[in-house]
Amino acid sequence: MFFQVAHPEAVESCLAEQMPKHLVALIQRIMADVGHHGPHDVIISLDRALERGVIKRGSQIVLAAVGIGFTYAAALIHWGPS
Image (cartoon, rainbow, N blue to C red):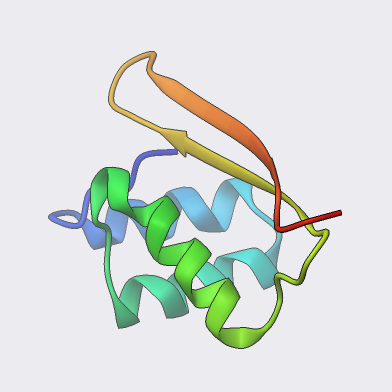
């Protein structure tokens, strides 16, 4: 899903229709805090998870991103030594 910051009402409408309410609230809080940074969203999310202690040694992390059109990427990372 691509968020166009220039049209926040479109984002809110799309979120409300297609996602569970708890995810909508989380995304709205993040968008209000840092906004959308394109390809850097994944790195910002990873940094926040590390700061909060959500990611620990041995964690498996999925990083996923979607671009404009039919571009997308994902990676599964095993964090730290086993």
